[in-house]
Amino acid sequence: MANRIDVEDLSPTGGEPAVSARPRIYPMSREQEALWLDDLLWDGPSRYLEGWACRFTGQLDIGALEWALGQIISRHEVLRTRLTELDEEPVQIVTDPGPVRMKQLSCSPASLPELLSRIATEPIDLDVAPIRPWLIRVSPDELVLVVQLHHVAIDNWSLNIFRRELMHFYTARVLGRSPSLKPLRMQAGGYAVAQRAAGLDPADLAYWRERMRDVPLSCTIPPDRPASEERAHRAGRHVFTLSPELGQAVVAAGRTLRTTPFSVMAAALAATLWQYGRPDEVIFGTPVSLRGAAADEDMIGYLTDLHPIRLAISRDTSFRTLVTDTKAEVLGAIAHRAVPYAEIVRMTRHSAEIDAPPPCDVTMAVDDMRWEPFSLPGVTAQLVSMPPGHSKFAMHLNLTARKDRGYAGWWTYDADVFDATTAARAASTFTALLTHGVAALDEPLGRLLDPAT
Image 1 (spheres, one colour):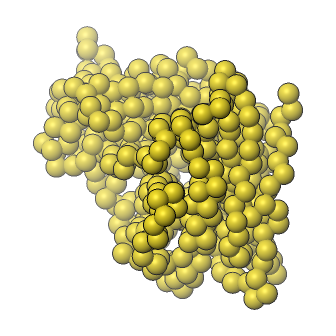
Image 2: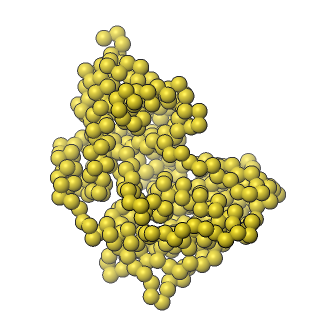
Image 3: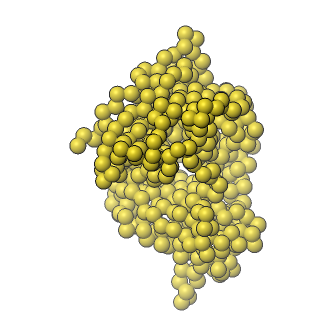
């Protein structure tokens, strides 16, 4: 089987996107530029591809679905924007709206996972468009919609907007109603212009220079094999769960310490990383939202950036102290979030260390968002988990709140350097430390890890 899918429609308009006679050209946002440059300089497939999939059973109106996708792409300029270079400057060029043609494929139910894996790694040309929809027929009355996106155009908040608007436009089309969404107050191009014009606050830069002074070069869990320059960064995934009882204990600990479940869970990750090497401090990254203005609330775009969490830790550190320190770090990162991660990384580098790994090669995200139920009239809709493509980091821990108050978790890892057993062991260690930590807030970590001492 070929590694690359034969793609006929490389853009949402079915071919090269038409550029207006007077195209609108904007600078890239700082976050977009960092990912664009990473793709440009990276010798291999992009690590920043995202995917969303849903299975429909029943009589899906394909024409209405294509129309709905077209309305979303027309409404959100970032989804019909070329990211490219013009006069040696990175820019985003907004193209004209046009009809959407989904790439349609067929496969058996048994071969669907393999096909989804291939789609998850199919390259996206940012000089064409950052989005590509697929429709897979699995049986006469069963279809799977896959929307592949590049991270430069979307974040987790945006995905909820996309789902909500897909329901709105599809429902309006099949029921013969007029769409009723209010016009957007901001587009990605205008956001980038405003961001660039505002510049970076010297106080924010000073904060991160101080936080990154003498920073540890890496806090990755020890790899199972040396990293190779030729590695493909294949992503592996270990899935696990946190029970409803543990989830409620985390919330209770957060209330006691006047903080969020994220700070409690991040403290457990810090303890996990510390256990592997027992350093004086650990560092990892977490995505921080850059949203905050009413104008960007309903806008699809990449308005998130990675920021470091750096924590001092020792055998005598209690879980209470670790959570409190984590809370302070999180609040500091949010207060100074305007400084892009790419700039923070540059603060840690000297000329002799240009090839050193970034400080946040382990990352963590907690999704407590109350996702709106997804449904379309006349069909049964079931969300499908997309397989991992390429790993963005050495290891990434993701935790998503469930309706039963537990959490679904997974470790995504670079399978070229880590074994599945290592990821499973890390997940088990994290769960155990979180369980013991919230149950004994004042117990020193040394005793949690070595009860006999």
